[in-house]
Length: 481
Image (cartoon, rainbow, N blue to C red):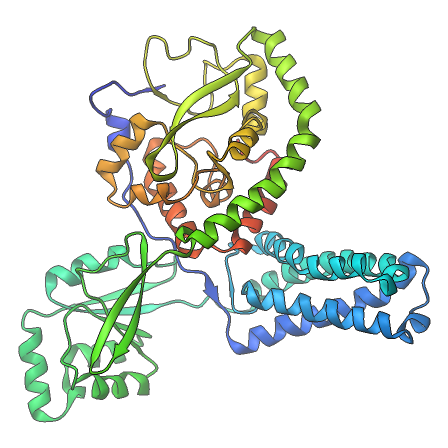
């Protein structure tokens, strides 16, 4: 048991890991993008042809109907457009082949909306609805299996792309910068600390040969594909240095050490003779994104409450029979912009679990749980009352999980970016929850925060659907515990 006493943080929580940026989504090359596009076209064609055997409709007869041809072309166009817009031909968030299935299901859920709406509104398509539904269902299954197979094939046949990064600058900055890079397992960083960076640069400029720079020659010799300079480069030197690096396939990047991401994005903009670094809010923190997430929450949570009303009533009865009242457990958590709210759960522990200890960090194998509580926690069914938190506007379906005020105060002191989690409504599930276990050790808080920040920085409606799809699948297999 991990007990946190008021007024300080215990030794276990004091061992919290440092924040480590998550690797950026893997990007596809042109050749692999064409392979994925070809697979999807093949899948859609096979699904359309196979749908005649499912529905009993004649494929040849339907092909002669203008409405059928128009509907098929529209469905195909929307499918490919949505897949392209959410980035399935450009990058992947998948860690393994199974994750590709979740991503494809999420994209397919968006892709079928427009064709299904058209089939329901256009009287000319009413006779074709069965065929369209069968085609969409078969295409969804086929595309998911194809992505599973292509991911497995790529992992088996193609070596993982690795970064070889060279970092150049003063010793102090060269030492500090790699810790903040978003690196994957096979990536390497070569450090080239230079005490007299400006003097070496001036000498090379006077000699008219930037290629003489020791650190540039070393980066080329080591086969680096990216060169990061931590010092300010004179504008007149950049074109020449750029030609040298591009000739050897090296990307040149500048890293001003005083600029760090903190709840905002940056973009470079030219204005006359000036180069401006323009700031803007993260996409997820804009009013439009907030409205979209609120509408999506309402659309999903109202039917969910109706469907799950009976199961929730049975769970409430089981909790009461097992250990009496209260059935629901209310706990203060920190929500959007630091506002506190009462989160709702089915009670899984004894009513007096923290009466003598104060706030206690929950962990696996809790002795304080009741008999029915152990089952509810293992299956995450104790979280179902949070649907009402979503309906009330305290939470969203997807977002960083909310923490108790006591722990928030401790983690704020440890991580300067911790409060960025409060830019949005907290979620029932989130990017950290589908990539980590539900019950964490305090030492994993840094890793959890890195997943939450990754979600905030890469948010899109597709990401939310991906999280929902994977959460539903993991719930069925009871991984969440």
